[in-house]
Image (tube, rainbow, N blue to C red):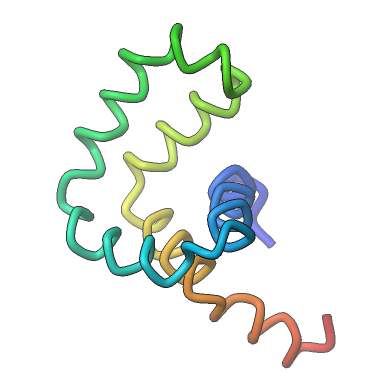
Length: 91
């Protein structure tokens, strides 16, 4: 498992626990081309958002949003495909 995507996996797990996994996966597909812009918005809003989320988590998420591969990981995690793969691999 690639540790650099751990913040993306935690984000996806929280969204899925809230019951929004499928909706978020669909929205992600629609706004995926804007991910680098979203990363910059996170960086600008980081001082205020750090009251709710750890600053290092926000920085890691912004970094991942700028990487094309991380969006694929997020989409897989949101749709539950990764869980099915882990179960199929024996855990």
